[in-house]
Length: 423
Image 1 (cartoon, rainbow, N blue to C red):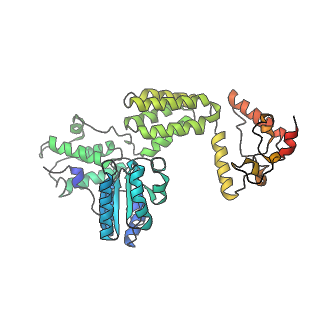
Image 2: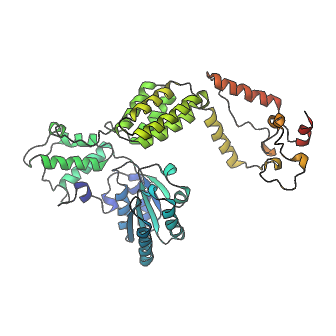
């Protein structure tokens, strides 16, 4: 039996990869790496069907060095050890790991020392955000590269190539331009979906029959109601969801949530709603933040299609809630300041202070003076890192701001002996 069309048409060189010019185009990083015969370790991340594994294998083949391929879901430690052993035998080698985010700590521990010392180069492929799904040890040893969904034009190019290719349909299908554009418009950036639909059409209709858009609409199984019919990319919908909630446009927020739900992308929805709740609603409505967390947990428990109910609840709640970015902006500006001007922790705040007299030790038994102690390092004692939202309409946040101002006026001291004497 023939392999599926999408499998037969997998690229074998970077030249055969459709799209992804930033990676494999003439000025693409991976192209430059191949031209200079300098392999690197990297992680490819992006939605399904965008060519991550194909790019990894094409890169390895173009490098003309030995490569091994394993799947993190099914590979046990023995399979990983065998791949490492083969890499040692062949010298300069590549190990490609599909679903790399599924590697547990034990399997990662097997790979990491050899990646570190250059025994082999690691190429990972994942559909999840590597900043969230991969641990720091893997990320720090690999360059992260995003593989983006194909545009409608790129998908159309892939379809036409499949029709003409001897490995594909070898022109043994009669299909009009409108039908090709229809398949491309439904692909949602996933070329594998487009090729699967094309293959279904080639089976269902006779070679002499001119396949039209109307014919394709009669095919019972259309796997992906793609959310990218208008060529907007997957991540644009995720971004638009947050911006709509931030702008309190509940109708738009529901629209972008629906697009992501139709695509079945629960992972992106969960992450974006959590970030949005803390970043954009934050102190203005902490209860809504908590409710969003609970709704996300409920969505995880029930899964699609019922997950849309708690997710819709959370989006409406967050969109119509008062907003405050005070906490988010404050920590971001503090980190930016700290990176340029580090300072030292006061002796009396250290976990195990050395050679500190009793009167200078932190007063665990004096809650009456805790608010009067200086906690900032001496070099930055007069800095204000928290920026309150002065225009807040939230009673809760107004109370926080008032408390902040009260303590600012009260002042703080690093003279613990003096503070301890005051009752």
